[in-house]
Length: 386
Image 1 (tube, rainbow, N blue to C red):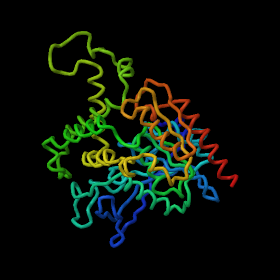
Image 2: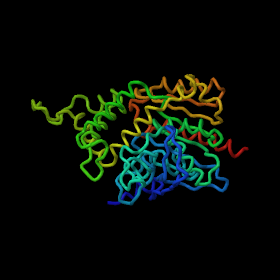
Image 3: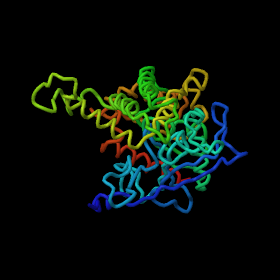
Image 4: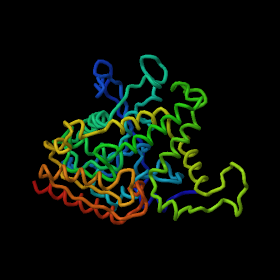
């Protein structure tokens, strides 16, 4: 079956590209002080870069995302990229107007260098020999890609959740390279509760007998542990109201079996999500990326005062939160907005009313689309009036 109709409404067939840098003797220095190289970044682009190179937007993905943000890899794909609702012709990130880039983060498992990549020093997968990475390291690696593409200044950096963290870090690390920031459902640091959920997920993986200290490549992977980690994480992405409306206490059958099997629809749903996740994600990458999110703390990085983090930024900001998001609640977005306004920065803030929870940024939402589209239109006009 072909998906011609859906492809026609998207950027169409796209191809993942790869850029390698930080070759030996020029390895990238990480936040930890260790080095990493060579580094390969998987990335995709949509739309065309204009002659002035002023229409480039960098899309930054969340924990389990990839470079495949929009379009289809083949005409037979059942599903498009993870943000296809918002990237494409006449969509929020209008590819008739903008040149959109999305890369897989370092530490990932979808084409970029991570724990499952081959360590050139050993000829085997890095596994736990892969160095700990941070959000700042992810951004520093992306900067090499943007340099390679010949883009002096990005019109915008945009992302939700961990992607929003990267967007904020971009404007802080490279203030002259970012015209605007779109940070959605994110925070300047993860809450203690969020760290706790991450740790439970990591322990689920590391206590799987097949994890084998991270050395499971070529062997049976820790699928049970990774599936459980995803089930735990997925609960945090949904709101209680959404789960009630979607599942309630409905049974898969019309009666109790009085056994320890799955009986409720919500149980089956979580198992499906967990089982699906292990088909596309590496357990060690899950450990490394969740740890990078945990380490992210702009307030701590700037002497305990979040306002200090934004003293030298030059970007305009669009900050968006969702009313039912309890993982990255609106209060954390407001904290970012206050810190920006204390520095007299140009910031637009919107809280969108929805029952969809944290995952709302991945789902179709007309208000979100309009906010992004209008903000980008103003930023593009600013650039071309200079």
